[in-house]
Length: 285
Image 1 (cartoon, one colour):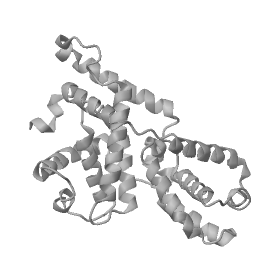
Image 2 (cartoon, one colour):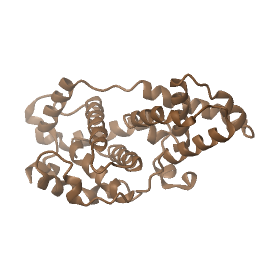
Image 3 (cartoon, helix red, strand yellow):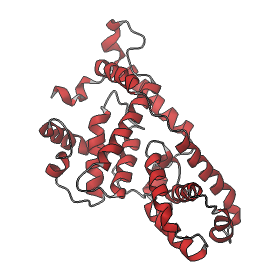
C-alpha cells in the first residue's frame, strides 16, 4: 500500500537539506511580503529567524505529544502519528509567523481523530483543552479547511504501527528471541521520540518500524542482526546496505533530538507576537 500511496509520492523527501531549504524559503517569503509594514521599527532582527521557527515548532511538538498522551478517552497511536504528519507537512509550506503553531496543533489532532475514525465529538475534544474552550472550538473549525487545503487533501497516513506488528509476529516465528513482546515498551518510547524529528518525512514506515524494533532489542541487550540478514533479507541481500543506512540514520536522528529551553521559547514567543501576520491572528477575532 505505502509504495503506491500519496504519502510516498508527495510527502517523502530526499534529505534533511531539502526540508531545511523549503522552510527557509517560506521564512524569507513571509519576511519579503510583510517587511514594508514594519520598516519603521528599524530592527534588523524583528522577524523570526529560520532557527527560531525551528525551536518554536519543536516546542509545540512537545506540547502536542503531551496533549495527546493525556487526552481522554485514550487516543489511539494511529491518531497521534497522523496528527504529527499533518503538523510537519503544514509547516513545510507555511511559516509560524503566518499561522501560530498552538492553533494548527489542535486542528491537526482534531482532523487526525476524524480521519482515523476515533469518534470524539468537537465538544469532547475541546473538553481536553485548557482555557477558553468556546474560542478553541472556533479556532479549530475555522482552521480545519485551511489545513486540509495545505495538505492537498492527502489525508491518509501510513504509520509504522502495522509494520511493527508484522515484525513482532515474524520474530516470534523465525527468531529465537525469548518473549518478543517485551520489546513493546522500548518500541513505543522510540516511536514517540520520532515525533520530535523529521523522520516521518524522510523514511518509509517499514524502515521506521525496523529501527524501533532494533533499538528496543538493543535496550534489552538482545541482538537481531542475524534475524535481519539471514531471515528478513535472506533472498534480497542487495537491499541490505540501503536499509542498514536508513536504520542507522533514523536512530541517529532520534539520539540527536534537541529540546529548546523554556526561557528561549519565551523570548521567541514574545518576538512572534510582535511580527506575526495579524490578518490570520485568531486572537484578534
